Image 1: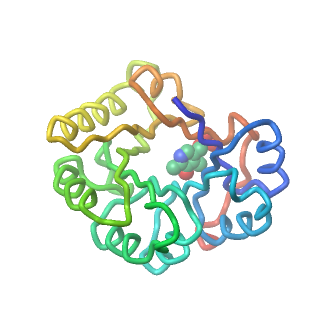
Image 2 (image 1 turned 135 degrees about the horizontal axis):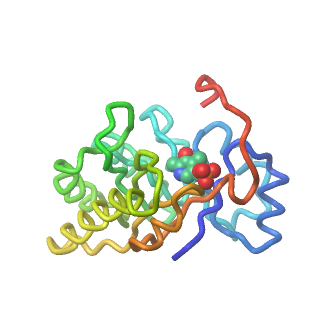
Length: 208
Ligand SMILES: *Cc1c(COP(=O)(O)O)cnc(C)c1O
């Protein structure tokens, strides 16, 4: 199980402090904000891995394919195809997870669970992407048992894909509020921001 240190809204100096404390994997939601920090921390670039965990528009695919190591939020074929087409040949394949709308919320991005296997097969066939597994942001739930349900559903979906021979090794689940539940259900990445850095200031959508 790995820790993804979520640095969205926190400045480059905070990322550097986390690096000095030993962290090497950093998660960002907003492409423009992330690119600023990737430039600011260029001296660390060879030692760190940048993960995009927020929703991604196709018009930002080139910047993401060029500057990131992982994308956890792939949820449609057109986007996956663009990321594969635009991944520079000198870089290793972009590591990707499919984001699944596991709680079935209208407002959430992510592929529907019923459509995930078909998408996974198509993404796994793209030459410049490496499909690693599944990611979800479940609806908040109160107690541990309720929090475990969507995580377990995602793990079962991963198991079903592996029974079809997809060979996936990654379950990106768990944030500050539900990390115990996610770990209990087999998380391989927990994505933690506020439990490390403190609460974030509200960020207007327009800044993404
Ligand atoms: C912000 C964010 C996190 C981290 O959330 P915390 O509650 O601060 O731990 C994890 N995953 C995604 C997709 C996020 O947007």
